[in-house]
Amino acid sequence: MPLQSHCLRPAEARPEGTVKRVSSVLMTGQLGHFSLVELLQLLAGRERSGLLTVDHPKDEARLWLKDGDIVHAEFAGRTGRNAIYGLLADEQGSYRFTDDVT
Image 1: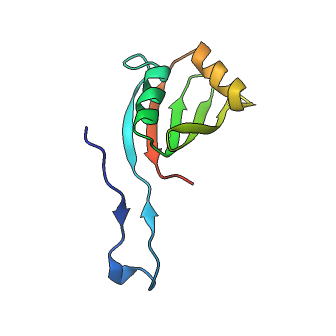
Image 2: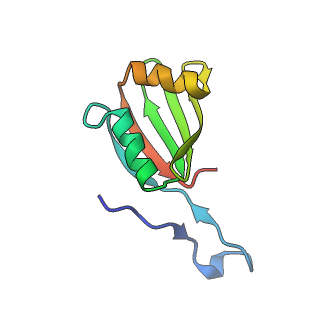
């Protein structure tokens, strides 16, 4: 699936001098087809920024990336490295990556 470019509202619909980026879902899938490490390596290699959400049976996991680096993570009441380690220890669920989420 090719990566989608950023979408912009038509110029006549924007207030003068402003540009609005619209987030889009770039990738979805099921952990098992790719491991979480492989998925993160792909996003890092492409220097992607956005939100990786994993719908895990225990809880929703969220990993925020900036230029391919994880800048924050939340999973099962944990944050940061502990959230990432918890998710890596039990890779299950579907995922989606949404670009340009702030």
